[in-house]
Image (cartoon, rainbow, N blue to C red; front, side, top):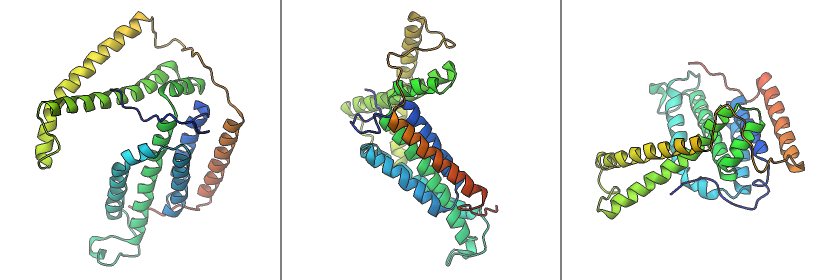
Length: 262
């Protein structure tokens, strides 16, 4: 079983070139780093959610909603204790929590969400082959591009192997969904051994397959479909360049930036 986040759909986002999608996600990351005020970051987050909606990636959003909610809550809860401010929060002023610290926590949480959802958007609309091709066309060295694409491929394979191991153990009577937290952790320990064995076996098979095909890490890879930048690709890239430029200028003049003091 191979667990992949890619969702096959006939949207215009899926038809974009891989380079366009990679550059768009990098631009979204830059937008997230340009601002620290939660209101401005909320606009960037809305932009990402709009892209997910257009790409029909709701299935992957539902898979990761618990993780994103926990990340945001942890950020809002922890950052106020490390940031100084002037306006105390009622009922929490004895703990040193200020409104400025809460604003910073919300901003950092939104940054994490933007980067996480941006990565989900990329993986939902781009295959591993497209990522490998785009990385090479953007000038990434062959070794780095191969490691980049192989990492995404191995994540799906290991997740699929983990799901298969859990299902096999359940068929033998091991119920990993009952009991307290410590009991569940103990039940998952025996599952690690077959998962490690599967990973080592797959690594050996991959090495033999690469050697049999004469693979060399420094050689340039060739693809059956080279891909071309079309009018929608240039339009999306131009929009991202404008957004990044305007955001960088706003950052330069201090708009959307909170004064953080630790």
